Length: 171
Image (cartoon, rainbow, N blue to C red):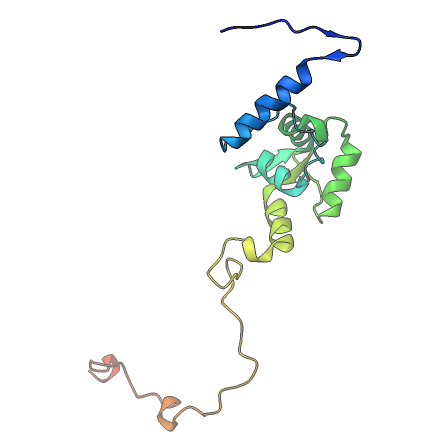
C-alpha cells in the first residue's frame, strides 16, 4: 500500500480535485461509490406494551398468583415499563381490563381464569375454540327461525316395550 501526504494549506487545496477525479473514474467503470458517512439514526418510537399479554405471560401456568409476585414478575419481565409501578398502578391496570384481585387464603391474588377471560373479551377471534371462533364449552348458535317443515307423523310415536327383544314384564 502506498500513501502520500498532501498538505492542505491556506488557499491551496490539492486534495479535492484528486478525490473528484477518482470518484469519476469509479463511476465510469459502473461501480458504486459508497459513502463513508453514517446514515442518520432516527429515534425509535417506544414500543407499544401489551400489559394484558404481559400479565398472562407472568402468571404462566399458575392457577392464581399473589399480587406482590405478579408485580415483581412484571418488573422482571419489562423493567423499563413496570419498574416504577405500585400496587395502585397494578390495580388500575387490572380494573381497566375488568379483572379484580381477590383474596385467597388471606392474601390478594390474581386468578389466571380472570386473565384468560379478559383476553377472550378483548380478542374474541384469537381465543381457543373451534374453527368458528366459538368459546370452549358452547354448543353453537341457535338458528334465527324455525325450520319450514314439521316433523313427520311417526316421529312423535314410540313403540311398546324394548326394541329387539321381548318385554320382560310379559314373560
